[in-house]
Amino acid sequence: RDGRANLEWLYATYELDGNWTLQLGRKRLPLLSMSDVQDVGVAYPWVRLPPQIYGWDIVNYNGANARWRGKLGVMAVSANVFAGGETVKDSAFQALYYSDGTKNDTRWTRMRGLELELGWSDIKLRGAMLNARNSNRITLPTEPQGDWGPVVPLRISTLAISAEPGPWITRAEYLYGNRRQEYGTDKG
Image (cartoon, rainbow, N blue to C red; front, side):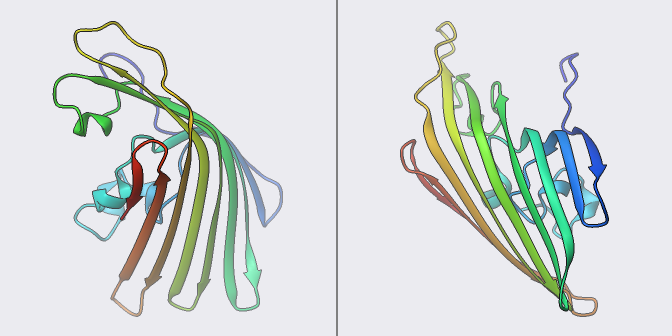
């Protein structure tokens, strides 16, 4: 973009055994059930992913994760822990709130999270959570670039359920974001 490389994903994967996988690099934040395919329009069943849930100022992270996949009885289980950080300059998401040319840089540091998916038969239950430190740098069009604002806690939790009996797909997803110290809560 604008003559510069803009990598969405670039990571290395090492498979320890049949159950454990380690990854290091730049990845999509695994908060939502369709996060890993949100930019690939033919990979999901909706015409467009709901922006109330999938619209965020930060959607990638630079860091590491460890995933375990296996079975517990008849249930398929996937558990993933991740950690890292990310900075977005001139956030397109934040531009929705500033129509006057104001630039808003966003930084999430000390990200750590957990993703858990349980599946049996045609039903999947998925939950994820993220804790991070959030800071913004707001620069008005007529001013030089300012300093980073205060660092405040950020907590996001998601819960999703999907059922795929036969040719039908039913999905429901809920997101709760605690940004009270910055501007309040997000629900979608």
